[in-house]
Image (cartoon, rainbow, N blue to C red; front, top):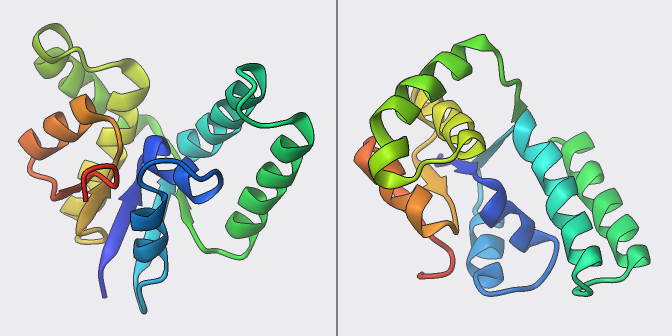
Length: 152
């Protein structure tokens, strides 16, 4: 039974069609798989959907529909939501010290990565699903098996 952690860059592809949506849908239909997102990912998903309204990609009514669908998936436990506690902030600081200057690791990406690294260490996930090339490279450097739905 495979475990997957979704970064927001990949997660939103389940709610709005774009490059990589088909791969995300394939993963989410895998029998017996477990899916994880961070609490930060919940907040980021709302932000990404709102940005799509501001940029004219979707309408405001689409936003409300997609947001409800996302929250329903969480309520139905499609995704296990991991609380972002102090433990993850310490790991994120370590990663920022290691990758921020040379690899441009950003704060919120470091927190997402910290959650994934911890879940992997507990053998709860097998794959980090992410559509951000830079974060994918850093995740691989941290020993995660990465799936970029835009390249699969």
